[in-house]
Image (cartoon, rainbow, N blue to C red; front, side, top):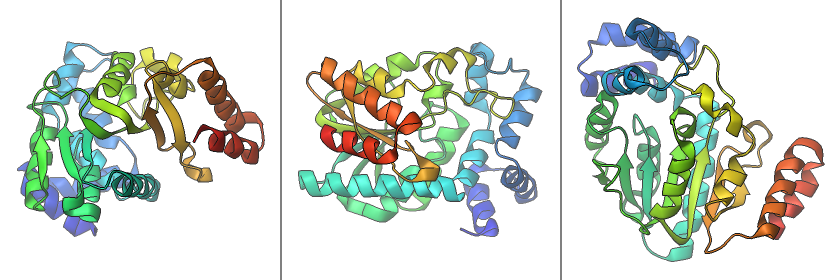
Amino acid sequence: MTFHELVDELASVSGIDRETLEMHVWKEALSVGANVREEATAFGLAFHEYDARMEAFYRETAAFMIETVVESQRPGKQGVVRAILGRIRRTVERIGCPPKILMLGDGSASDTLAIWREFKEDVDLHYFDVPGSRTADMAQRRLALHGARFTTLNSYAGIPRNHFDMVISLEVLEHLPDPLAAIADMAEFTKIGATCLVTESFDGVSSKFPTHLRSNLKYAGRTALLFLANNLLLTWYNPERELRFRPMEFTRVSHAGPRDRWRIRRIMEGDRSVPVTLAKLVLKALR
C-alpha cells in the first residue's frame, strides 16, 4: 500500500480530513507510537497505569487506528503476518473446512484483512475489539470497504466458549489489567486441539508506549508458562532470528502435566542460552 492509498483509506473510514491524516501518518512512520504518545499526554493519562481515564482513552482516540495501520506496512509486522498465514494454511488443510478464527483485539483490522485477502471464503472470521470505540467502529467500516466477510462480536461476555479453531491475539496482553484472565478466556474460547497465535510485549514498558502496563512487567519471559497453566501448550514458534517467538502458537490440550512444563522450560532456556539446534530438537519433541 502506498502512502497516498493508506491516507485515502483512513480518510474514507475515519472522518478525519486528509491533510491532518497525512501529518499523522508521516509522524507515525518516522516514530513508532508517536500519535498515541501525543494524544495520551493531551488526554492526561498516567503512563503505564490502567484506570478509568485510560479506559476512556481506548474508546475515544483514533491514534491506535493510525498506529496499527502504519505498523501493518513495516517489514517486521509483515513477517509476523506471513508466519500466521502459514499456520492458518496448516489448519485449513488439517480440519478440511473453514476454521472459525477469533481475531481478539485486532484494532484497525489490518490482520483480519490480511487473512481475508489470502483465504477469502476458506476462513470464518470473527472480529472483536473494544465495543463502541472509535477504533472498532473504523475497523468495521474498513472491513466492509474491502468487502470482507466477517462476524462482529459486540460483547466480550458474548464470545462463545469451546467454539473456535483458532484465536489470534497480537500485541494485546501487555495492555490488559488482567492478562492472566485473558489467557484463561482464550482457553475457554477454543476447542480441544485448537490453536492460539500470540505476540506480546510485556517487557515493552517505556515512554514510547504509554498504554503498556507496568503491572505486567513481571510476566516478561514467562508467556509460555502462563499459557501452559491453562492447558495451552507451546507447539510452535516463529524460528526467524529477527522474529523469534513472534508469533507463538499454543495448542489447547485436555491436560498439561509436569513433563510439559519441563519441555516448555527447555524451549525457553534454549532460546536464551543453548544452541538453537537444541531448541529445535526440543520443539520437535513437543509435536
